Image (cartoon, rainbow, N blue to C red; front, side):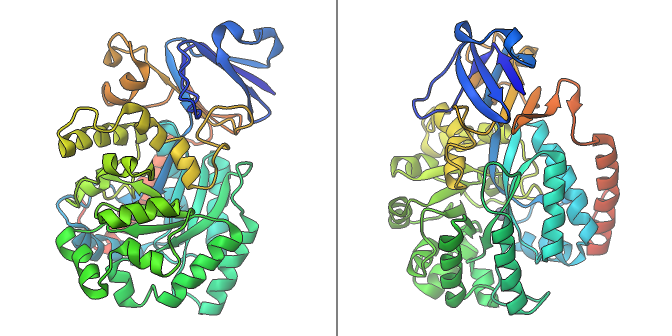
Length: 455
Ligand SMILES: [Zn+2]
């Protein structure tokens, strides 16, 4: 099966930073076969399907490197809370009231939300205890909806759902069954919590840290961790006072700082920690909109990049942010960095695109496989149509697409060479049905959790 995307500006997001003002992308059997200027495109008669992209921007499918999918059900309920208060007042009651059906219904909703805005890959950091069957069920939803997911399996020193022995058996079984491979839509990585709250509770211990480091090495999987994502004067300072270390220094001491480490948030890393993380080849997954939402600070992304850190972007769970629209998040990130550094384009637009594509692929262990349109990469593609008044004259498509207006819906989304969205809408999800089901599930969940709803 050959698909030819013809015309439009193409950002292959290759290492050279190529921009093709009028280009083409040739897809063959789920893989990118060729990319180049339109004048060198193969004849339309040589392919099975032609996608005309004149007036569009063609980019690799976007990557959201930090998500918690079931938060999609509870958007709108967390305004006005610092992170620590939100954890106590919203997250804990909601987690306790969550039922297996909510997990699956919210997965369909999350997939529809992300795919519509061009996200084709996401890292799903699990914050509730899951069993083998529920993870397998999530894999089926990922495959059915066509979104690529790396599920960050939660690792606990003191699992409450089952015995530690069964917990470890399930973790290893999942890692064996769902390796990180671009050919698969579902893979399993690891998710840990080294924050102040979790260490105090005994959920994370130094012994567990060593075991996680060994697993990550043996299975070559990323390990996601919330790093200094809280309020500076509360959990961030508490951690330093108790341990005498920053969270990254603590991780380094216990074997958790390596090239597969995903340091989510990381707003308050010290200068030494930034260098330590860069030297270790770790990745930071910045969630600037989430940090802004909970008044957690503005991450120093410009400084991180100058230190040589690999920086990817994540939405965080959309009940503390309330959006997973990656281009919207890049817009907010761009503006916040200007405010922080009092410098226009403090983080250049090219770097923003990298954070949602090739940097993210490297962070997730999929470098060269996703996040770029180069021969041999998986054919994950998003096409954004700039033929609308909000884009003005569309004279600078990579800038226009992020900054001009608020509608970041992709016209076409392709994952592994399969159409998941075209001009008629999403093809893999019955949106009306999913939204209706999710509204009911959300209402019931909020009521069981005792959360205030206003509908
Ligand atoms: Zn998070």
